[in-house]
Image (tube, rainbow, N blue to C red; front, side, top):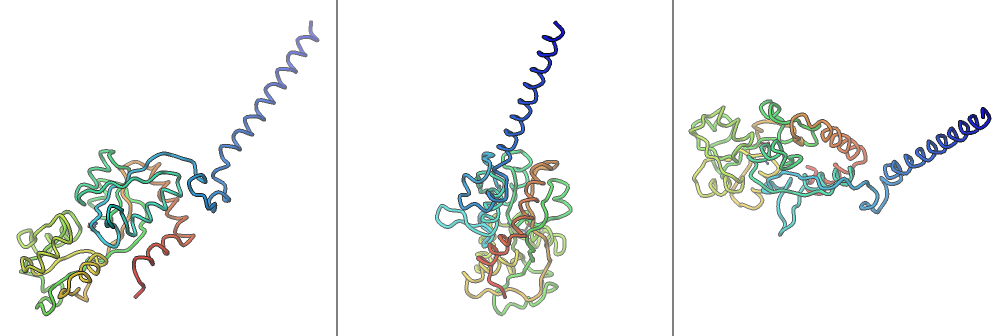
Length: 270
Ligand code: GLN
């Protein structure tokens, strides 16, 4: 009887050991897609684990960071977001909205992250968490050629156009008074108002400023910068899991040169 019992014991130990080995093998299999070989694989769709859709909130009226080309989204943020999604194994879906609605949308969980040349500010840090910065922005001043506004100080007492809810809006209201600032839902509308003489200057980020001036003859950007800022990706406050994923992907894409390559495609070195 004792012999039979010990045989059963030995047999059950073997079964356990076998099961443990099988488990190890399975673990290996599920980890396989994350190996370095797969990261460099040409076939992006099958290389990464499929984690489903990730939604990006943006305002596609901010060239060269995000804008529409026909029905398609294009721009630096759009391509960086796509690279992040590819890196992490998500399918990217872009949701276009007013700039002013992006943080609300991310906090409501309607979208997973906001990316729109969005500046990291103290106030916004109370509402959302930001990734590491992936670009620098500068608030610039656009004026008509021949304007008597030559420096930022000359803006005192002038009518200023801005895009609603942007740092240009916030800073100019603080510095020159709410009464002097007209808020437009799109930067392009502020620029049209400048051309039409409804405002004397527009304060907007430097790269969109260049894009708008290229499209509209007779406008110039002041040499003096109004403010220098960091752009980052916003996630819902406390969503550290996604924030860590995004930061990890940003690090990889910075190190392997992808981000620099995307930026160079849209912004020529000066
Ligand atoms: N960088 C500015 C901000 O974050 C403007 C961004 C935008 O208009 N898309 O407020």
